[in-house]
Length: 175
Image 1: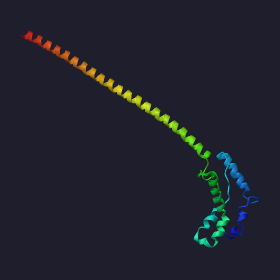
Image 2: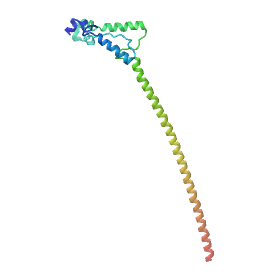
Image 3: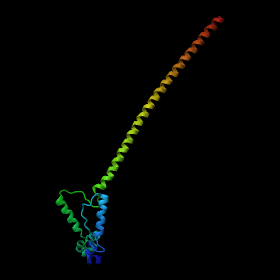
Image 4: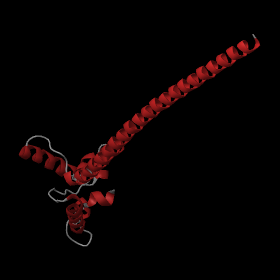
């Protein structure tokens, strides 16, 4: 911590062998490739120093840590953005994502929704077709059973008529 506080600008320098310039170029290139733009400010901050400035165990170095963290630069940038652009707008940090990063999954989810909706409609149509088939089969089965019963009754009546006729003939034969 003493090393950092001795020269905090050294770790956050843009140029030089251990400068942040190369990192910022890579961040911009990544943002352009994956988020369709690089229209945002990159403000290097030392978040650990900012956090430590708020802890009671570091209260004797509180101001030095806060200043060295450069968190105020980040907060000022947000204030200026709000003043210049009006109402609060969506954060375009790489952590918060950008419109393009949200748009791609949204399109995929929408396509999946349409696909599942079509599948649901197909299943509903098949269910209705099967339901109608079952109803028709029940009606046909009932109709077949009624015909079979009628046929059975008709044959039973015919057989009973033959029995009556045979019985009368035998009575006349024995009489």
